[in-house]
Every structure is written in C-alpha cells, then in structure tokens.
Length: 449
Image (cartoon, rainbow, N blue to C red):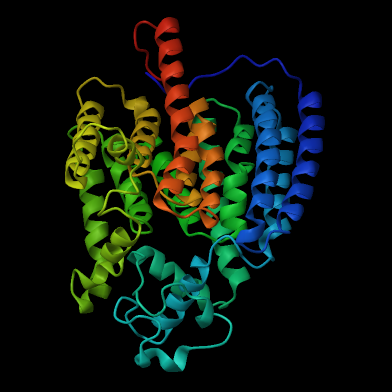
C-alpha cells in the first residue's frame, strides 16, 4: 500500500511537546495577524511569504505531535491554539476570495421564497433584494446563476436567517470545521491513535486561511466527510451514506469516495446516497433538472475544463512536441478509466474492511491531481486524511497549493501551467520516492494496522 494507517513509536515527552507547541502556536498567531496586511493582488506575495513561514512552523509541530506520547494537555493546547488561529482572522473582511458574498445572497434569495437557480443576481426580478454591502461584491452577478448544490443552499438559508453578515457566514464554516474536528478525534481514538493528532488538520495554514479567513464552503465538506468516515468505522451504513451525500451536495466531487466507503454486497450506503441526492434536489426542480445545476456548465467552460487547459497532466502532454493534439475528451476518458479502475480495485473481495481510509485518500488525491483545480481551497479536503496517514506527497501538495494565489498576478495559460508545475512535478517525484521506499520496506502489501 502507498498509504496506510500505522502507529509510530513515540519518544518525545509531553513537557517538551507542550512547550514547543505553545511557542509555535504563539508565533503562528502573530503570523496570521501579519498576513492580514495583504489587501489586494499587488500584495499577494506578502501572504505567500507568511504562508511559507507558517508552513515550516506547522511541519515542525506535526513532527512533534507524530512522535509525542499521548497527553490530554497536548490535546487541549492543540484545540486552544486552533481556536485562537481562527479567531485571529475571523472578524477581518475576506480578501482572498469573494465567494462568500454569493453564499449570503443565495440565502437572502431563498428567504424571499425564490429558487436561487432561477435568476442571476442582476435580474430585475431580484431588484428589491439588492443592498450596498453584499450585492456589489457578488462575483458574476451579471452573468451567472448560483452553482452550489442543494445542501449548500439550505445551509446558506439557515445561516442568513440568523444574520446576513460575512462574519456570521464565516462562523458557520468554522462550526462545520469544529464538527469535523470532533469526528476526526473520535475516529483517531477508535483506531487507538492519539487524538492530539488532530493538530495535523486543525493547524494546517490552508484550513485556517480558507475557512476562518475566506469562509469557503469546503468547510462543510470537511464536516460531512469526517462524519461519513466515522459512521463507516462504526458500521453505520445509513449514516455514512447520508453524510457522504451531504458532502457531495455541497460540492459534487466527494461523490468519488463512494467506492472507498462501500462494503461489498452491502447496498445500504449507495442506496441511501442515491436517495439523498434525489430528495435534496426535489425542492429546486421548478427550474428543470438542467436548470437546477445552475452555472455548473458555464463554470466548466470558464475554468478551462472544456478546453482542457485546467488539467495539468493534459496541458503537460500538449506541451511535449509529439506532433499531435490530445483532445480534452480523450483525457476525460482516461481519467474516468483511472478512477473506475481504482473503484473496482477497492471493491474487490478480501480487500480488507479497514482499508477504507487509505482507499479514500487514494481516490481523493487521484481525483484532485487529475482535475488540478485552479484554487487552493479545493485541496483542503485532503487534509483530514493526513491525521491518519502522514503522506509527505500530500503534505507538499496541500501546502504548495498557496502558490495558486500567484494566478492573481500571472493569469495567462502558460503562466498558470508553470505555477501548477511547481506543485505537481515535486508531488509526483515525492510520490515516486514514497512508493519506492514503501516497496523496499514492505515487499508484500500490508493492511492497515
């Protein structure tokens, strides 16, 4: 196995770990406050410098936690600083993304008993809902209906019924993170692993900046995905199916994890998953099935999915002088074959029921690499798996995703390709080294310990 959950011998005492964690935590808080100095694209390099230093401190903390003896005081310190990190930037206005304004707008539209998939924000039918604080900051307000699936829309509605403020929407995302952290801690304990390893997720700079800082809805995915993994561990197939469907109805891509969580010949999970998808869409079908997908197809064209420019591997192949142009459709078929092959491999007999976490990481990381998203927050869903499987390639991929903010400055296709090369070329190198070392150490594949 490339990835497997395993216990690591511990040799760092709690006193050393707690002191080190405290010092690192205090330094990180200072860096989060300093990172807020960036306010626009011209200053994005400042944030990247801050994120680089934070990543180094974070990796030191991970190294300590992975080798520390189990300690309740270490867990408390971990959670305390995770909370302080988020509070340090929670009340600042988001500047890395303006997606959150669409979330608030969609909640407001639904409160007016209007289907959020029906109109673009600039439509005259929504004129009475406009204001000076939210509406002017909505991206694509003149051209696109919402793109977000039903569970995300329901959460937007519920959140905005409390308050239509940016801070409250960000608070909702942090609360979903808290739910995910609780579920991951329970899952760690069920495997006999120290719960303090939750630091690996809770201290990751990407999660703090993207959720407490920008309020991205991917925090909902973290919460629902962690619940799905925990329910699967407890053999609660129905609960696992509901949680996975909920994650998929926030953003569609968690659905690729269905084969990893599926138990052979047990149809409860996939049946509940499918029913959950259908039921969630029913209230929004007044605009028709295609209309309920909102701006999905327009977004695919906009981000270069139709042209193939978003996909790093395809872009790399096209830049090799082969004398042929590989069509996007061929790459999509290739990606489907790869993911389908993994799905078959994961559902084969005698694969080992406890391998589902490593299977989920393999599927999630393969999908993410094939898609090669243009935005850092799309990589955040890989981070919870690192609490169980310390994959160096995935650590690098998630931390290096900050480089995608360089596209604020360098947005041409060739420039974006070079930025992604800085992420994916080292990732593939680290993955190859990891596989080679694993095979030397374990010539015979072993199951999760």
